[in-house]
Length: 104
Picture 1 (cartoon, one colour):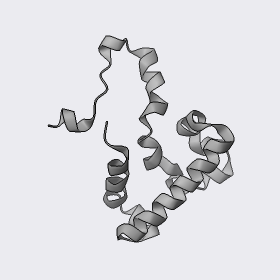
Picture 2: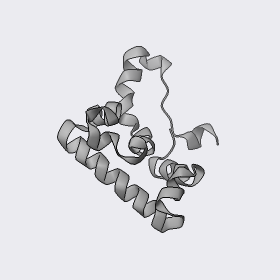
Picture 3: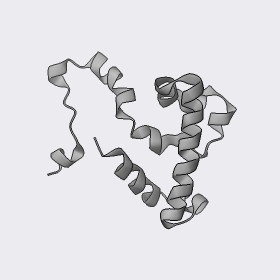
């Protein structure tokens, strides 16, 4: 697993659509993160964390209209997706570790 904040920062700078919409550098990232986190908190407060992580844009037009549906923010919410993995893989078959340990 990648560190979520670093993952979000790298995604912002790796995919051109985010800086194109919000601007370059720290100010652009701040606008991007502010928009995404506000939309996320709005959804989670109405529908719950797990339902929003699994079906963010499916909760209605407010979420569907969010730029790229908070996809990069949600991809870093590993704990929301872990129950599915645990349901299909026996504990001895599932290894969860930080990517820094894998790539070291």
